[in-house]
Structures are given as structure tokens and as C-alpha cells.
Image (cartoon, rainbow, N blue to C red; front, top):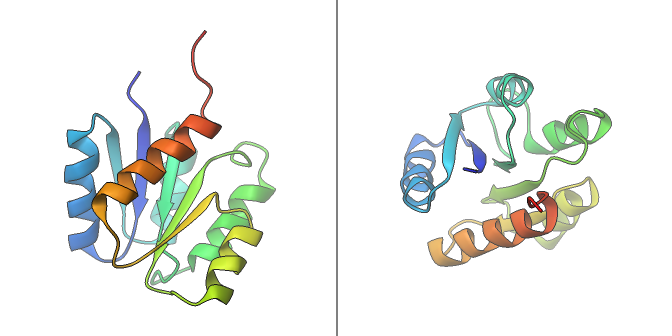
Length: 128
């Protein structure tokens, strides 16, 4: 089955680039450019993984992760934060509130895809 990945970033160029690589790797890609769109998409679709920027125009990624972790329906949704916030304190904060991984921009696309596969391998149930 095709895994569904949601990309949430206000930089359209980054979203489009990631979509190309993920689609070529066989994933179904959903795109959002702010937190409100992301929450709506997560509620309406059965997303397998969310890739989430921290700095969004309406609601920051930290707040979105907190909401996801409080809701029983989305509590276990894997989240990878991808952000230009590169300080150790930002990374620790993201992981502490419930992100499964934290990738700093700019990043290697090979590392990015590998981290996605690793998170999915750990968190998404595989068929028997």
C-alpha cells in the first residue's frame, strides 16, 4: 500500500521539491502551506507521516505537534520537523513535545528520504 505523507511548509519551492522526490519514491504526497490547512488535511485523510515546518504563517509547528499528541486519533501520527531553526534548544524542544525526528535546513535529500523510511519503519504497522 502507498504511504501517505503530508508536507507542511510555507515555502512552496521546498514543498514542490520534496513532492517530486517523495512521489518518485512511491509515496502519495499531500501538500499544505499553513497549520490550519494541515490540521484539516490530517482530519480528512489517513496520513501515515507528517513533515512539518516550525515557522508557519498562522500557527507554529510546535503548537501543531502539541495538538496532534493530545488528540487520541492523531496521538501516534509520526511527525518529522524540517526547519531552519537549527539551535540545539529548538531541536530538543521539538523532540520533547513529540516529534519523531528533526531535520535542519538545508538538508541532504538522500538523508531526508532515509530518515522518512526509518520513521515509517518504526511507526507504521506493517501487514502480516
